[in-house]
Image 1 (cartoon, rainbow, N blue to C red):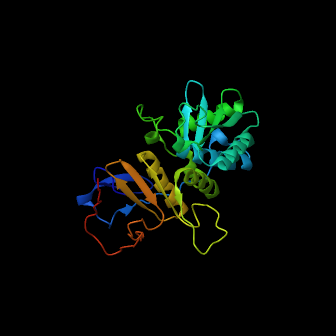
Image 2: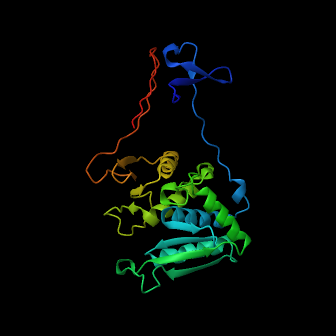
Image 3: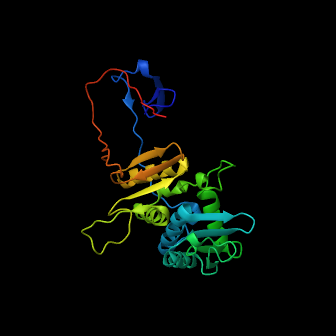
Length: 274
């Protein structure tokens, strides 16, 4: 493992040590490998049933793509043109705690402010301070799905995946990812599949975000799930587009390949592109 200062993390007798790249000698040093992240359910949701965990993954994925919150009123809002999807999310909220107050409104109910272009946009509003489950959901979203940069942490550029999602079972990671893509991604269907159901795994997807933390988290998550992807960066918009299929320009996906080299004794370098 090569660090930012171009030193190599090596594994001695049960301990990690550091070697300058120029002094690397494979005859007495073995490169340390990063062990798999153990699966566990974090303390914040350890009392959730399986159905509640599934509901939570759906809500978190939807919130990361389409959500916002109001710190003064302690409300969580998820807006989308797909009314049926918002109704499903409302059911997910009630699965977590039937005492949580939530309802769906036309996002532009004020005729004077309504934009005809968005007249069919709806908003699911969740009031969290009135129930124990609501306050728990507030904590999971307000702290788990946002970074700590003061100027950005409540905006789209401050969105991120919860840190503990990487230690959850793959099925929960897939549900969160599917909900995230359904909210603001582009999912692709196979022409031969007439009974296609929109998921992020059978047919591929692309997803665009301005959040560096979110695109980094998605990279880790897709790697853990064994899904190949590529990332394009738009310098003008400062946005990242992650795609699990060939991008629209016709470029082919880059395939990763690991090769073991046993007879190399020279220095080891890392390549960083900014």
